[in-house]
Image 1 (cartoon, protein in one colour):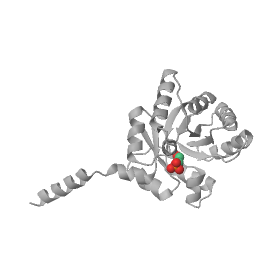
Image 2 (spheres, protein in one colour; image 1 turned 90 degrees about the vertical axis):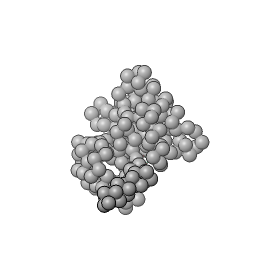
Image 3 (cartoon, helix red, strand yellow; image 1 turned 135 degrees about the vertical axis):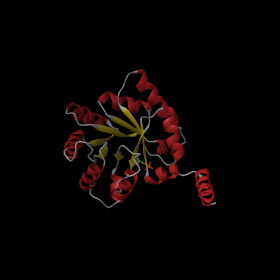
Length: 211
Ligand code: G3P
């Protein structure tokens, strides 16, 4: 499973990129507003830092508006992927953008059937939201494993990005059931590095080395 970072914070992207563990970035309007940044400037900077896919979300309600915004954003850099919300208008926009070879990531996916529709419209990626599914009392991992199974059974090449990740356990679950990618917040990626036995082990080796 590949790892993306889910942030619009430039310092976090730079720091995590030094570790060699991430191969893409996802953003959304909430993450960009948290940085008090302008979407287009933020995407320009991030897409220069990272070679892999950088998802930039449209905010229009209509397919026409989404396509217009998507085309503008895709001109920023060849690695920019257009993030489109799951809806009738969103699916229309995905179909048009796909026919013009613009890559898309269908977001706010909460069921396997939504994922199938997104894939059939021509989405490059689909983003089921693990944390928000669990918030409703449902089991996100059933949703992810259904999508994995359906895509495999029907030779669908759309990649699954497990999103709305809140803990290392969410990443473990996504990897176990075969998600192609997990997009993970900075804090969670850092948590994944640590293990108490690693710290104890390093301390002991250092102590013994001094003897
Ligand atoms: O990738 C989507 C993510 O940013 C949403 O996360 O924690 O707001 O559900 P959250």
